Image 1: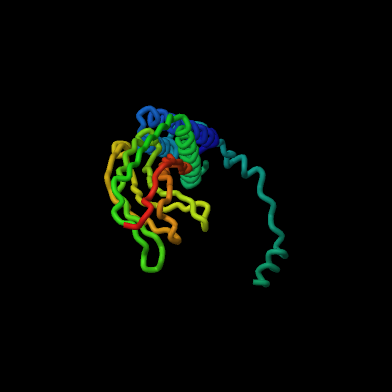
Image 2: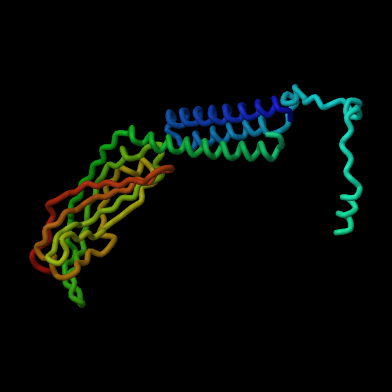
Length: 92
Length: 167
């Protein structure tokens, strides 16, 4: 999941859970049924799980632009000094 | 939020925190209910009034208990525990409370009742002070919520008395 997707997931998760909670509370209080409140909230949690936890395609609309391989070859990594590496090997 | 496990954990934590908030608000909503319970107890008969072999007084009574506790039930009530206690004073103890009968009321429909019953638990004094004793009968109730703090209250009914001599 890319960065924009992660931000979207966090916002969606919080908003959906808060809305589930508020709706559950209001419906439960007006129908005087504690059981209704719990069921609505549980349904809201399941819905939020389905929307935010799997890696849906719409979370990957801004993929990271990795450096082109040909560009990377022009800037090679520094070489490790052979003497230091031999010392490490002998200690083992 | 970069992996499945991380998102699942974040969702679970937030969901449980929000659940705690909802339960706290549900418990708080009980404060807005109007409660006016009422009760009346009559002593129908004193069945036995004697001194036990080891010296303590014992009474057996038949009570007629009628109560309307329906207004105590809210959407957040699991059950109401109700009991009747006899309260009196002796030279040895400034307050004696003896539980005579109790019941659990699981639902609002059962909260308005009238029963005639002999005392469920024995009424035994610490001593021989019950002859001619004046006592109160108190109906206590404990409201147990589905979430939140239990609260208790009572109705005190004074003016009952026991006979002057053993039967």
